[in-house]
Image (cartoon, rainbow, N blue to C red; front, side, top):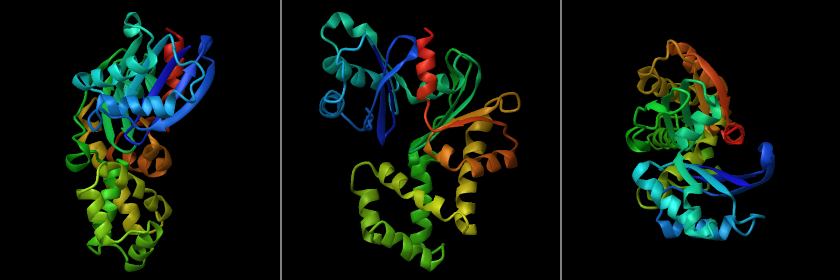
Length: 284
């Protein structure tokens, strides 16, 4: 059995896979991100949420893909996985930790070249040559970048609502629906941990009100900004842009419209890379 994990800031999707790519078990835990969590905190999530559900706690190999798992942070996750899932040091080599960007690339493109995009709680993009990520425009996070992400859509939404740029009834409906006050919002964004998760959790309100011209424009312009500031720095004239993530999946219509308006060709738009990752690792 091998264990494949696809982790964002909000949740981690774990799949136990048998020979021939047979899906044995699927488990969801909270998100793991070494930028915000220590090795001990990550280990506790694995111990408390994954292991009690996992039928075989000693997989032959673990392939973990996650937000924040760049080179100098990946070791934090690998050590946590090793301590919880390995029985001895001689199995350390069987634990591989990579970025969520590589998960998207392998899940969407397999061993073919293409432009790969993530649009979930955060956003990111790269050019993948079929083997590795060749170039990557830094996403910069939801404060400086992450255009088109759930966190940025939520940020734009509450900014416009609190500055009275959207219809007053919409503001009242939003505050009532989420049981929030303007003071609550400021506190959650500036003083509480994981403001990106909080803001991304507000973005579904946009999907409920896309018939409102100002809401539709907010989403469309954020997607166009994602293309202009990220995708169009790659060879977009000769390669399709493929997408992974809840925002790309649930706002597919507007995403395709934004792409058409800026001249970008779209390919696959999926909610999760997991099926592609299972195919990729099963064929090795």
